[in-house]
Amino acid sequence: MEKLIIFLVLFVIVAAVLMYTVRIVPQSEAYVVERLGAYHATWTTGVHFVLPFVDRISNKVTLKEVVKDFEPQPVITKDNVTMQIDTVVYFQITDPKLYTYGVVGPINAIENLTSTTLRNIIGDLELDDTLTSRDIINDEMRTILDEATDSWGIKVRRVEVKNILPPKDIQEAMEKQMRAERERREAILKAEGDKRSAILVAEGEKESALLRAEAKKQALIAEAEGQAEALFKVYEAQAKSIDLINQARPSKEYLTLKSLEAYQKLADGQATKIVVPNELQSVASLLTSAKEIVK
Image (cartoon, rainbow, N blue to C red; front, side, top):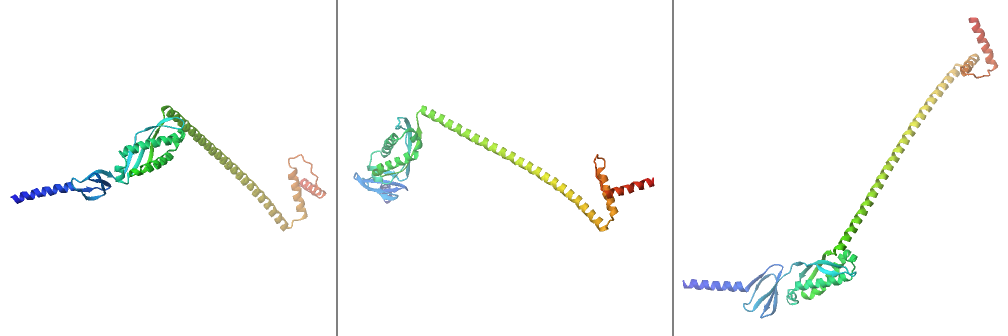
């Protein structure tokens, strides 16, 4: 029984010593350890042992990137306009020892440094430049802060100007200007649309007129071609008739008779004086005599 009690006491003592002396550092963290009040080591991820009453963990530092959103700061531009600007700083601790011993209150130090740097930069810019030069302000602030915090074991990754808040009267003037600009753009777009619509209508009318003219032209061409074809057929028939007459070798009297019929048709129903050749007059006399005999 006594052995069991002694074993339990020893077990408790060993467990207590292990709990007090063994330290496990999590991922992305670092422990700054002091021995007898002086810096001793920086522990990274893994298992470490502390000497009781000798070693002390003075600071636990995260190695992840830290994002700090600072309160708006009053700044004055080169043209004496007071405005409020708030910033966001992205930084990472690269040296836990310098971060622990380099400055008192590193976060407050970064905030104060950001505020003074921002005032200096904005003081060299006018209002319009401040509103349109965010990228330039961000880059310049990052460069200055990174150099200043290097001795604190801090790496400034990025600085962003979050909000720029001019005075109320300037905001109202800017809003009016923006509204006027939007209205101007809308008017330009409307004018462009009307112009495009008018062009399309004119092009449509032009196309319609061209189509009508083309249709009329084709109709006239078709009519002329029809008339030409009709005349050609008439002349062709007449030519065939003449060929047939020539092939039949008509007598002189037949030809004279046909000529007389042609003259009669020419003078039919018209007050026209026609001079008839002598040979046709004799034929006409014979026809008249023949008609009298028949009667």
